[in-house]
Image 1 (cartoon, helix red, strand yellow):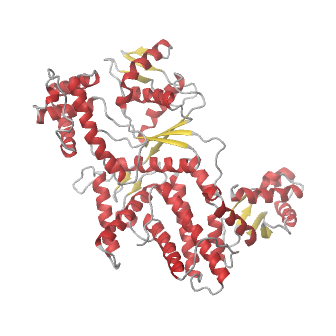
Image 2 (cartoon, rainbow, N blue to C red):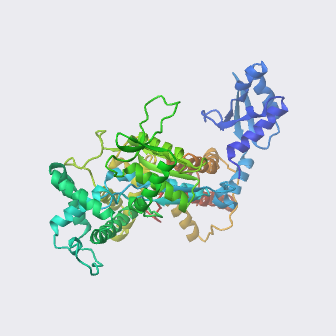
Image 3 (cartoon, rainbow, N blue to C red):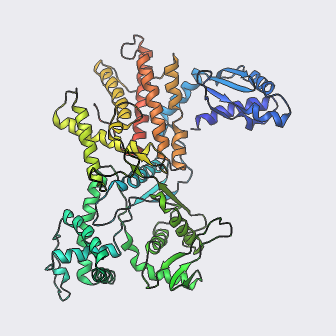
Length: 588
């Protein structure tokens, strides 16, 4: 199903051609003055210079060609040359009917879908997720879901920080606390325990303590670096301990990500490409791409068109150690071999723009990717408190993501319990669902690159541009449909009817924008476009609801048409919130 505005533009383009003008001038847009018209075309203004004619004259001639249009019920040429358009109710009805009959409401599927890998999450093993991890997780998850809905094959990879000095520090911290663990006995030849000797809580205490000590004690840092070396070079006990650290940490990460409905297809990390790095380094040297500069192995990535300095991409430090650049490039190499994706998308905070510029340039220059492979980085803004500074706990520390989620759920539970007759268990279940909508919508409704203020009172409100407001609208529709069924009605096989008032027509006009919005959200990796659409759709529905008799409508045919419109509105809203990563309860 073509985009609705494209269909209107085709009709307008034919009229321009019939009047002797370029059909490309017939581009139709939604009116920016809804008090005057529903749609508009400004092509006569653009054509005035081309045809040396007053724009209002061009507009008048085009309007005459649309006098008998089945698409527009009214076309007015107004000074200085605008075409104000009113849509035919019958034409709009046909477009809405097509939505009900076609898969995904008429969203055009690509002839050949892309294979896309999305690198998001950014979690580090043995460290708790904090509020800074929220954006990467929910934006990446939504981009993954939107692109799948749009017809692409999408693989989500958490790309764990599970290698390097941080693991050496964790190992040293455990050795201090539990020196008798069998993993530290390098002469041990037996089987290692299947169950871990520590909990996630203990692990999360170990790293910050070890990290702080390494900054004050050079000898301790040297021991941590030695532990890292032993791990990376396959010392048996250290590898076994690392596997236990991974097992405990990943289980906790899955639980925390799961509470936000974030699911990864791959749980790979930096460690997965450790064995590939020597091969990649040799390839870069042999190909003449990399050279030694001040002892380090680097690839020059500057280009003649650069207006600012772009430093070389470092592959190995002067002591031969690898860096994040090294593992990211080796990961690109591995992904091309295993999956051969058409596109790789990375999500990190926006301060890493230079880093990804270097890495992507290096990947292209060294031919790790094909010329047509798209590499895309999305830099997101920070989550700030009401003071406009990065969100902190009351005592000034970085807030754990688990704490943020719990506090939001508790606030939502308090609001759900106010004035509602629900059992405690049901209230808690509903509160958890709605709280997730509050968190996800509160984040995703902002353009990714922008900072935003986390305001739990506003995010959990049932009014305004919030997740709970969207869910409340869906639940309202579900409630009406449930009552209709209780009255003996069926929601199957209903026939839509032409709009009889402006609020009903406005709701239909909002619905037919769905496929253009979803396609744009996928192409531009922009979940905020889905949020903006469903907020407008929810507003259009609620305006319609307050002005329209539905269950008390006496005309059976009209009543069935209204119910059919409700079913479609509910289904479109639920498809949208699903790609955003949350769901609606049956009642609130």
